Length: 160
Image 1 (tube, one colour):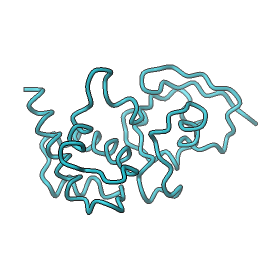
Image 2 (image 1 turned 120 degrees about the horizontal axis):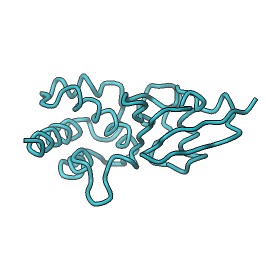
Image 3 (image 1 turned 60 degrees about the horizontal axis):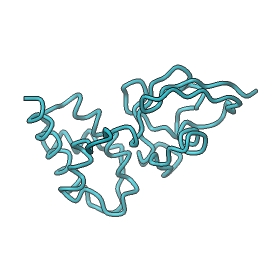
Image 4 (image 1 turned 180 degrees about the vertical axis):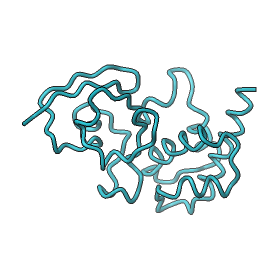
């Protein structure tokens, strides 16, 4: 039996009817709302490409049913930057060459958002541990770690 989902995604309220109970959040975001920045990687929680913020917590959207999003606040990669400027994490991935093919990048950035909320001044080991659930097949991770550390410094400087 189809259900209605009302959620706030990237600050915008959505009201979607006829949502199948088995529809995954990643497909809801991509196919119903047109937010294709959230990538489908493995469909089994192994890669993290589909990571979004769900009520302030980074979750892999391939394991959340869309009907669970009813009443939730969700942020996807499209909601990270403001209209004028990239988020420091996005800048960091650009400045420190933290991406190659870019497929894992949205999930990495979403996970890194939570990482920097918990650890505003992380060291390299903390970044590596916190991003453990996100896989990248291209970069070897060093530039991703450097990008997160660069963004952490930028955010600390911005808040000082």
